[in-house]
Amino acid sequence: MISEQIATEIVKISPDGRNDNALRRAGDILRRGGLVVFPTETVYGLGANARSADACARIFAAKGRPQDNPLIVHVASPADAEEFCFTTPLYYKLAEAFMPGPITVIMPSRGVIPKEVTAGLDSVGVRCPSHPVAHHLLVAAGLPVAAPSANLSGRPSPTSADHVIADLFGRVDMIIDGGDADIGLESTIVKINEEGLILLRPGAVTYDALLCVCEKVSIAPAVTDPLSEEERPLSPGMKYRHYAPKAPLFLLEGNDEARRSFMIEKIASGENCLFLCYEEEMTLPGLKALSIGKKSDFETQGRRLFACLREADAAGVQCIYAPMPPRSGMGLALYNRLIRAAAHQVISL
Ligand code: TXA
Ligand code: MG
View 1 (cartoon, helix red, strand yellow):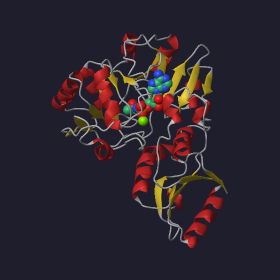
View 2: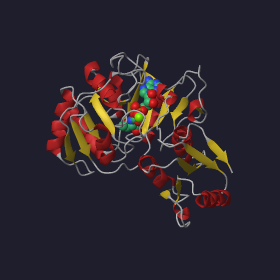
View 3: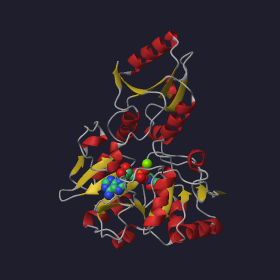
């Protein structure tokens, strides 16, 4: 569906969330069924009143999002989830450990959130963001707010207001610019089941951190492996190739020395390619590259990854190469985003 052009107001708010007037207006827009883009600690979100099927239909239209991909619901306080979810003691243990913060918890739905929002599923994802602007907006709106990442479907999630403006200007009522996202990768998603937790999307709340709260955490196969044609993912979003760089992306599996030799070979061959590489590798003469951060600094790599993918898209190259992240700690979140952007194309060095 093509969304018609609407007037978009852009407001700058200091990251501590103090601009009562603008937030009050943003709250009014949400209560009237409008769309407001707001910063969170993970990525920017495209918000609408989660109780309204009509308001949320506008999210799908603005993003060009497939109707079968459900939206998660943002709340000002963990207990606000009682209105629309059947919560459990494990939810409150997770909330105590990680909320407000970068985690989304999927629980059985009470049917209050319209089926258009949950894509007909009998569960709802709840997220209580820690970003002060997001928090003050949720309080000002006085509503649960459905919000996917504020990118056009198929583009990397936005980590700055500029990314949002590039994708959604003219498609939303208001964009709140609260500066660059601190984490830069979307929230960790877990689903509560009879046995414990299933990790559906890795993020800044790591697998090890989850294990400190719940003894039994399994990792959904789609986090690391490609889905076969007939397989149904536990989270509908996992079946989409989330980021589609225009040029094919390949992950390089191998040690520093092997990656260095590969780069030298590519420079000598004159191939029109771009490397996403570690800060330490940027000095190689003749290398066309973007730094994702120091090799051991996963926080910076998380913060920069999506901006690098957008820049790589704009670079007009034939091919993009990136180092294979480790599959532990924050590395698992980086791996999950990169392996899908690369459509599982790996070069073993
Ligand atoms: O950090 C984040 O989570 C950001 C910020 C804005 O909060 N939001 C975000 O939303 O990344 P989105 O829609 O881009 O990703 C949410 C994912 C989708 O892949 C969707 O399929 C999945 O969560 N999801 C939503 N509801 C679900 C449910 N009931 N069961 C399983 N997966 C669900
Ligand atoms: Mg998204």
